[in-house]
Image (cartoon, rainbow, N blue to C red; front, side, top):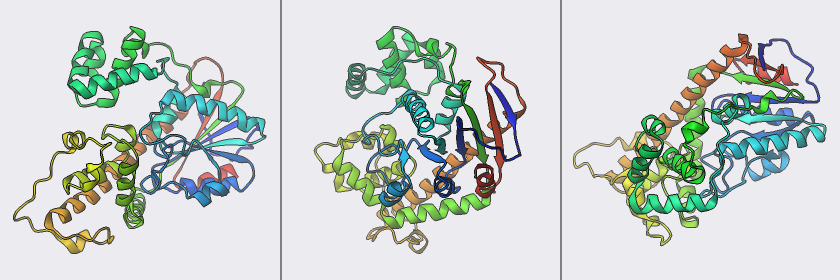
Length: 378
């Protein structure tokens, strides 16, 4: 694979694959719609939150009308309590790329989940997916004895992963234990095996566009997006999810930015939704703790209620709401910061030749605005 920089608008070949990478709230969706209207592209979502059904407001998911007008692959494909591995994503994208090319279209991969992009461009270790029976066995073990028991076991069978992971990293600890129980091989050994990247395909031409807008501008966009989410009813959406699904706080879906902060808020105000028989309130309390009512802390309720989120009748609930909004804003900004870091690293690779499996070339182009990226692709 050869990585090169390109500032000249190309004529995209029929076997092209385009990746449009940018931080959250930067305008990727609007540009994707414009490009879809040219008739040249099919849209493939690269967003680990949009895969979930019924999670619409907090993910800034396109509306039903928009999805009808601008169909997206890999949106609304699983329920919130289900899992979807990076390997499954790569396999689905490989199939969809072939389908797009067979239809005479260029696949446009658009989204902000950098882990997914990394898997496409850099490849995955050949770690097998966990079988359902193994997942169930490990989940029952975790629920009965706690994540510490799994972590201690991992220290015996895979000391390398045990040293690398934090004791509270439920998802990765669980995955490592599943892999060992299923294969008798430590996940750290699997991860040392050679990678094969989808972008190494010599019959495809990959174009990677990174858009890194001005940070103050992006921070303002993030604030505006979150304000819209509160007004559209993100809290009510999470309550509806809790009523519908047997959710737990450690599910990947419930770690999505916004949803996690709302869950914490609902626990802190002791919301009655946790009286649902299919929910284990103690699991949520173990993760988020119980909210202690500050007896003398003054709360600026006028500042808190800018978005008219809820009718608040107590200082405790007001403070919990205020903290929820601030934590969601901070978490979204941190997400954007991590995305910027990853994009900067990728663009630095544009002058580095990597002699891998073939001579396929990935063209990497970096822009400061979506308008510039759009000119490249039209």
